[in-house]
Length: 599
Image 1 (tube, rainbow, N blue to C red):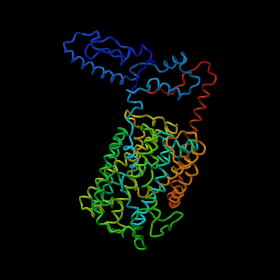
Image 2: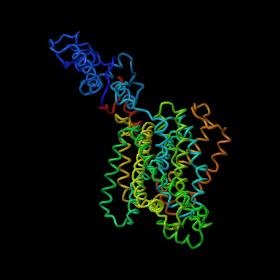
Image 3: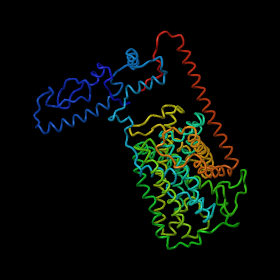
Image 4: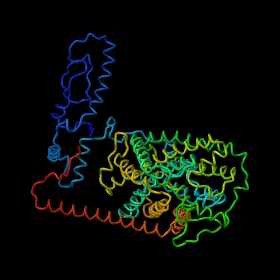
């Protein structure tokens, strides 16, 4: 750990640690590493260097000593933390009788690592702006029209266009508005966990975070696989033609390298995502320009019939039936995969709540970033799809994963198809980065609230939650061998439960905690908000109701595991508290209740 020594450090230890030799000659020991003396005022061996050179070297020396001061470690100070605590207790700085082990450890952490603008481990990292945050929101939700093929295959041209035009006003807008209000009211890395916990308590908060993180981290493994599908589609190959070992090694290596980029900091992710967004959407801009004269508007209104729905059902990998509504195929639409694909493509705006504390003025900038995120998502889906289905006459059963590359090639030639594959690659990089950042910051927020070990609350020198990123990459590597076409519905179900909890938390906090400061507030009263969110709530429940029995079993088991983990955690904490209380009963002299001292 890097620390910043301060005036409260015992003078003899600091003096011993700071005794050093100057870069241009021997110096007397200084009381602090950042107490500089001009070269001309120091006792040192005479120098033959010209005066202007000495001035330059003096400035360089001061800068290097600043760096050296930041690199002084706790071990190098050779200070006993227990002695520091005892000395602080004697002079009344702390009261050990009123502090438990965790509070004592936090006090020592703050003592040896106080807030300092020069310390790379304090929260003075670069903040996000509106555009980088809007791009991250865009990639948390969408990233472009990649992955819309299932909607066309399951719904046909008309319903696919209608879905991406109407459903944003039933899902995306409400979720973005809720995130803007609650994210600015509770600018914590835990995001929705904080909202649900404030409204319904720690158990609900834990389950919300647990389900959301599982869905997000596992969903993130889809993006490398989705790019592979685009590449294979352009090469007219199937996944079964790729060596499984080569596939696993390639996807794992890419995931680890992208995890390292994510660790370098949110501003880097945001800036990188901005350029990626421009490049990734460029083939679709060209496709719209070249394809506009080829559009036949009658194709927009094509609806399915008995014959093509059977072909579309045969082209769908997972079981389109089953569950409580096995025959939900009215109006030529395979409603279960159709709605699941729309839900997957149009949700996850709440993930931006984890970044509300990463911008300078969340009250004004955060809502603007959410608004731009919604606009980019809707335009990024609807406009390219409008040209893609209007300018081509492919059968709906041909719209399998990665088929947009063939559509682009049909409209603009093989070069545009190849460019689309390249765009899919870099777009999935940004999707990966945005989701990984949101999941890692959510784990950090859960650690801050005591739901998971404190190790996940530590930031790197770049301000990023290192251990959260490692955990996310580990899940992605493990899940990279799975068939995600069959898992999307299961992930949607878990995420939808967490999302419904957030909507309920929003309403309850509006009613029971109106005094909480909300830098941004939806311009509706509580009754108006209930009316606004009711259609969203009902359509989300419809998606859940169309699930198969396999999904219900999976979700039931997932939730049982979550409750058992939370129960075991709370029981363990209660037992430890009882043991601590018993161990302190009957003691006549105060002791230092420390479990460990951070290094």
